[in-house]
Image 1 (spheres, one colour):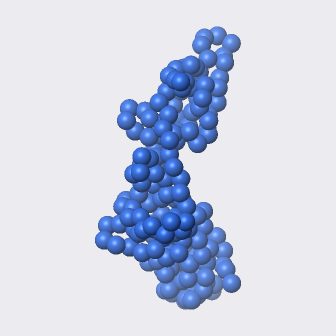
Image 2 (cartoon, rainbow, N blue to C red):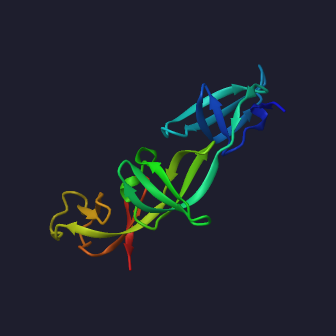
Image 3 (cartoon, rainbow, N blue to C red):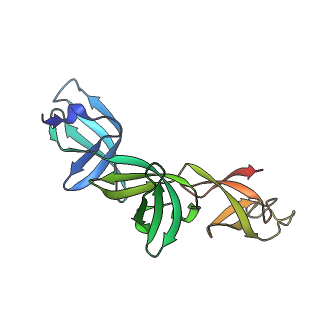
Length: 186
């Protein structure tokens, strides 16, 4: 059975010119004049690039199956991250280049890894992680020139901006998408 643009749904993966694109959102449009079309926002599965693309209604499309698996990060091994499948206890080696948020990856973190035909495509960390501050300068109460933040290094080695009152040894919640400080944890 051939699939068409009428079958597009959020989360569908399309094969366009040999590249895999995930549908973020779509809208079927039937203008008063002219033919119907489908307006989409799609994300390149490998690079993360997001583009808007319009397709004619009823156009034949090539859909791909992507398998998302929950894996737990174990350790780093050369150019790979090693994850464990918690159901089979298999160790899976995934190239470091597939994770855009690798600087927040901590041992024991559960991640969603996307596979296509057995090949890993991407690693998605949780929306936020809790990390311990390993180094930061003491905040000077009168220093407000930089909106009350200072650089801090967390246990994974990443550097983030934190409020002046955060000290070494404190746990902070960090957004894995942009590295922003979300709050202090107990």
